[in-house]
Length: 155
Image 1 (cartoon, one colour):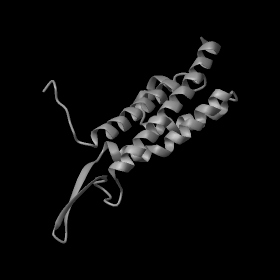
Image 2 (cartoon, helix red, strand yellow; image 1 turned 60 degrees about the vertical axis):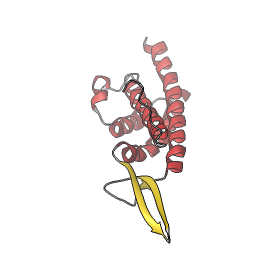
Image 3 (cartoon, rainbow, N blue to C red; image 1 turned 135 degrees about the vertical axis):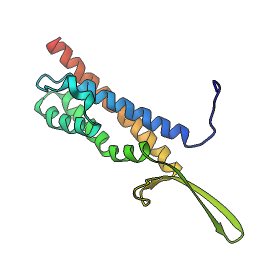
Image 4 (spheres, one colour; image 1 turned 90 degrees about the vertical axis):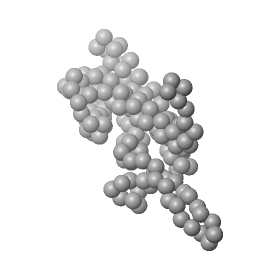
C-alpha cells in the first residue's frame, strides 16, 4: 500500500484542480484576516467559499490602492470558476458503454449525479485544471500584495 500508484488518467487533472481550489480557500481566509474594517477574520474559516468570496467582493472595493483592485480582479476570475468546483468535488467519472455496429465503444466523463447534462470530458478537465491553477496562482500573488500592505500599515 505504501507504493500505491494509479494509472487512471483523471487523477492528475482532478488532483491539480482540487489542490488549486485548496489554495483559493486558504487565500480567501488569509485575505479576510488582512482587511482592517472586516470584522470576521476569526470566523472566516467557518464560512463557505462562496460566502467568503461575496464578502471580499463587498469589502475590497473600499480600498483605493492598486493591490486591492488587483486582488478583486483576480477574485472575480476565481468566482466564475467556483461552479465547476462543486461538479468536480461532489461527482465522479462515469463510463458509457455502447455498441456502434460491431464495435463496443467506451467513453468516460465527469458528470453531475443531479443533472446528467452537466459533464466534463477528460480534455475539458485538463484545460479546467490548468485554468484554475493559474487563477489560484494569480489570486494568491495579488493577495500577498494586500497582506504586505496590511503588515506595513498595521504591523
